[in-house]
Length: 83
Image (tube, rainbow, N blue to C red; front, side):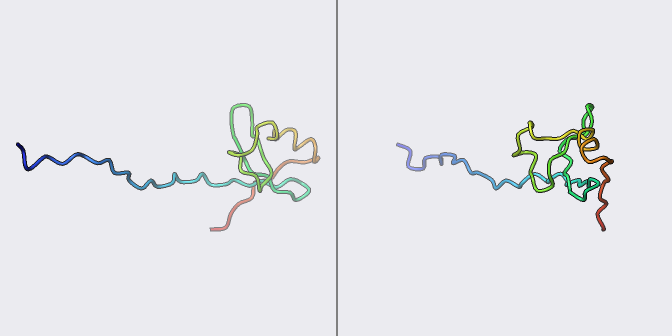
């Protein structure tokens, strides 16, 4: 009889670190409304309103840059953040 059984391994879950967030890139239209860059792909830039998280927003409400330029009669301007 074995009076010193070997210990059974117990799985230990390690704390996970959140992935670093991608910096938010903001743009302003000629009316002064802020837009958040959701995707900068081969088909052009896609935007959502500034307060919307693209990860939680259905793609059907994303706006193409060309649509925003046409709707607001002017280009979007990237906001530079102060250091």
